[in-house]
Image (cartoon, rainbow, N blue to C red; front, side):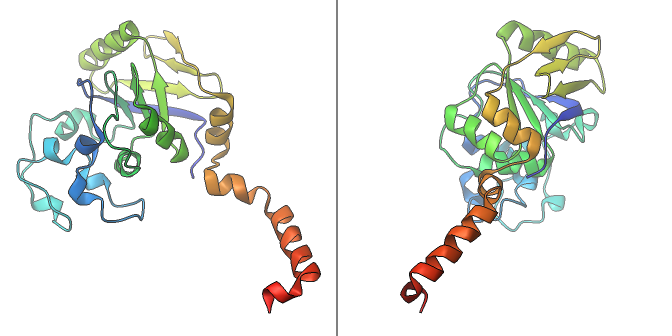
Length: 212
């Protein structure tokens, strides 16, 4: 997966608490396991005025002009700012896939559902937990500042506001190392590829009947 070291990104504010995974990517779009192609259906029921189905041409669908991600000022956002308990509900890994495919690399919230939180790290998204007061101040800053950007520095574990204020956050050391190096579960395994090959060669030599 792509490394995450430092991100200077546009922020989109989703001022909702308890956003569940069915809102992030509705159930009818879960038929594929390719990890890509879910971005057009991110927050499908909120972004569009009709009922979405797999295979539709989204360019022909009517957009909800009141939904934040349809507003021009937030187009191209890479950082999602939201409220508590983001990613609750079912454990579908398609939720971080959809966020990543849409272009988000970081999500800032007061809290996250545990399984969604873990799935973000496994797919190259950084979930950042800040206090309710810090979240409130960020919402005010983003809404008052068109084109508001934040710097997310994972190496130093801090969010830097446009006014220079620094907001520290904490990430588990192992997860931080994985994101900094772009290691997903497969990548972690492949770090030991030489040892795996040596083991298989030894088995083939010592137990050739297993490979007949």
